[in-house]
Image (tube, rainbow, N blue to C red; front, side, top):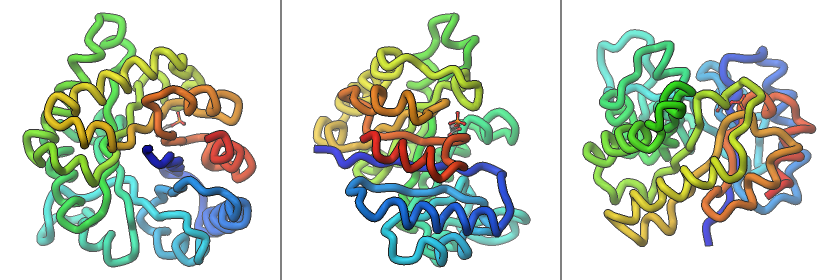
Length: 248
Ligand code: PGA
């Protein structure tokens, strides 16, 4: 049985005070929830949010991690720094990083490996653009994104990693993939992993991301290969995010 995981991705939103208030509201509201919940927050607020989450059990995540261990890499934040302040997760290869900041399959793989080395669980984001979907390239794109990481880190790494399938056309657009569309790709990803290691494929959590909202979460999370969600916009509202967490 895979443990469900709901992860909020706050992106570059809010002030310190707003983040602290949101974290406190989540900590209070999640007392009775048994599945794992995490929030990926801006680097500069990680420590404040960790303090606000207190002993709630909600895990802390970063939205990115450097592709190098340490040294002269101005502006970067290393995996050891994230581990140092209690980060459990780091997103790698979010589509906004890939499309606006030049992250490539190779640099994403390097970030993934750095996180693994420091026991920060990487959450590998994969997904196709609308153009790629319309030209029947969804599986090819997802293969390339996955294979770059498998080649660099080895399939065994996925024993301690999370995958998030996020169709780019569904992110922040209000257009969710249908339950069946999402399940189809999740199943495909699990099969790709199974070709190399069936035990890991059975175990690895694959989250869906892209306009997850309180009113569509339940049906998505009910699909057999969807193990939870990576939630952007809707994670900024405590009430809505709590509802999503309760949809598992
Ligand atoms: P969204 O973002 O829920 O606002 O679509 C999801 C994500 O980018 O992780």
